[in-house]
Length: 194
Image (cartoon, rainbow, N blue to C red; front, side, top):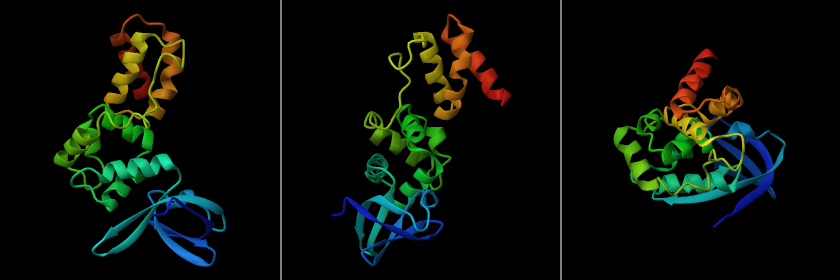
């Protein structure tokens, strides 16, 4: 029903914020309420969820985050609160990358997600999150060889975040190795040094 709300943030709580839109305060549950600031005029992309227990608004900083929330809701066993908890624990790109790579063990670290639910998330969403995954591709950086690209994807599959892998990528480029295995060994050495 709503696309977004544009108003002033008047309250921030641990799991929701209140946005005043033309003197009406909307309580909006968010995975990242502290990303907003009281007194700030902001646009919150919202999703209205109607249940037997009531009508609830869920809000996000971007349309992409709202889309990921809706994808998570489509998974059997994931409700709005679980979807918010998952999104609050991880940035959207890393979460989408984990799902795309079928990392069931990685997904079980989120609140309320056991092995069965994690497997269901992968089964239902793998291959459907291309818009959210910031892929490491050779066209983005001409210095990345196919071997290095494979190694970077392997490091992500091992559970390292995209941010961690991005940080060591320049060091790996400088190594100029010839096989993915060599890059993986060097990458792990860099990651374990931090």
